[in-house]
Amino acid sequence: MKNVKSISILTYLTIIIIFIANIMIVRELEVDSYGVFAFLLALISIVEAPLIGRGSELYLKNIGEYWHNGEYGKAVQNTKYLINMEIRIYFSVFLAFILLSILIFQFKDIDPIYLIVLALSIPFQIGYSVYKSHMTLVNEVAMQSIIEIIFAFFYLILVYVMVSVYSLIGLVLAISSAALIKTLISRFVFIKMLKKKNIDYHSIYAKKSIINYRIRSLNSVYRNFTQSGIIQIDLIILGIFGQPTMVALYKIAKTLAGLPLKAALPIWKILYPDLVKAINTNNVKLKQAIIHKGMAAALIIIIVVIISSYFYGERLITLMYGNDYVHAYIPFLILTVGYGLFFAINGWFKIWVALVEKISIGPYFYTSTFILVSISVLIFKDNIVSMALGVAFTLSLMAFYAYLLGRKYE
Image (cartoon, rainbow, N blue to C red; front, side, top):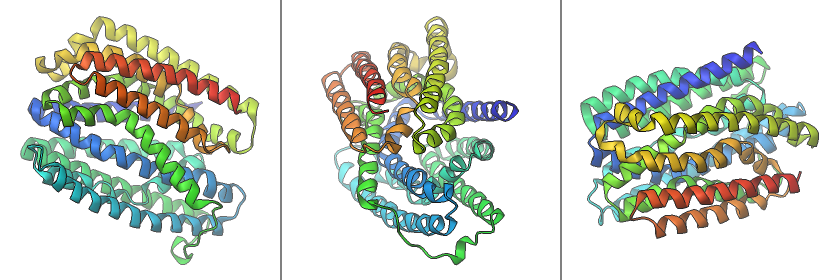
């Protein structure tokens, strides 16, 4: 229980520190500049998330089985193979972003250097998915939480200095630099953990023995891309068709609407190792108990956040971000419901759908959700309140469908 409390406290402190950093970013940038930044970040995130998700899933499901069975040699061989593949993929994606920045910004009044520098965060995270997942796999969640809070303090200081002195270019430099530091720290801890088991990481050569590696890899990238698209597509469409001011307001609404997810994160972080074990060992009763425990706790958090936001949300937005962002209040309230149901209460679904044997479930589910959200955004792109209503309704409907899928294929 003491360990659980420590993890929860560290996680909440990390969330608060990152949240403060984001407030500083908003206050230091002009509204239009923040809108440009939100658009660029969405472009990067829609690609970055599936790449990291791919590495995490392959490690937890496939390489994780070798660790649980004591086949450490095979585990390290496949780990090195996975990282070698990440080197090729991540740098290829970075080069694609260079071409994309030159192409897109022929039509947008934005300097392509901003996107190019921000895109460096992708190759700077080579191996991060593996190092982070290993701590989850061996139930070292407390160590992971300590690393994250140290990184959060570093990120806060770096972002504040860079954005204050160099504005938007300083901000994108800070984010890319922070990604590199985070990866290096995680790698150092990963190597130290292997040494404790007398495993010499550097002396073992890379070798692939994962069954259906290509199919699982492509499946993961596609599913995580659609899942990331669900979160980012509204900002991308607004960035293409709308004004930076609209993007800035909607980004604030989305950021605040994500608070229930962040508040529920420590709950799922604590439950994930047992959930992974229950799924891998096909223990249905344990899996159900873990999922229902997490859902109940997340629901309580969402109710508290919604009630508090209804009475104090508008004043808090003005206090934190300034009068320029007060019109984000209504979209924020609406999105809180949809985001809370889809991401916080259903926090179990992402890990379940990655590990379940019927691997086609994830792509179908996230593709359907992505298409429905995209259609909703395109229809209501001229009004951020209407757009928030469409997105929240779609996410709420799909959250219920996700639960039905979990029950059907348990």
